[in-house]
Image (tube, rainbow, N blue to C red):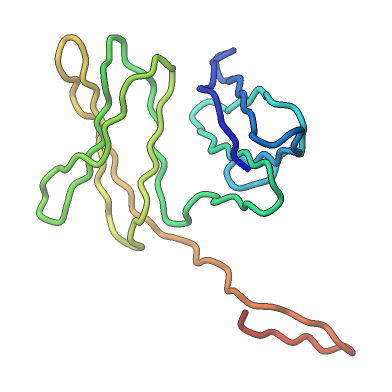
Length: 172
């Protein structure tokens, strides 16, 4: 029960060919995109088209037990275009003392768009984030953005039963 995925191959401006395999013989794959089931298939490849300025988290399972992790509810997704002659991208976040800290170094993979998910963001707080590229000629100027996260609360974990015209709601 293990799925191995090849590195996606760009086949169009916003399209990627994804290939995978399993250690099971002829499994029925379940494919999730951003936590939503999009396909049941026995095929071992798929072209995924992503709208401009969006990203997709694809999860592939070869069993009926595994569940999608989905996207964390309190997160921000950074998206940016590639920079010519880039070696790596740095994502930085300003800490409580006002100092910039590197939270991720993403090596250039020769693709046209990159993304990074910032997780565990606090509600009703301002988060300052910036990205800069390091390349053959040095570093680019950082591109900054500021987020104020106002999160919609998660739905309560309850069960509902209906019997004889009465709805009973109880904690799950």
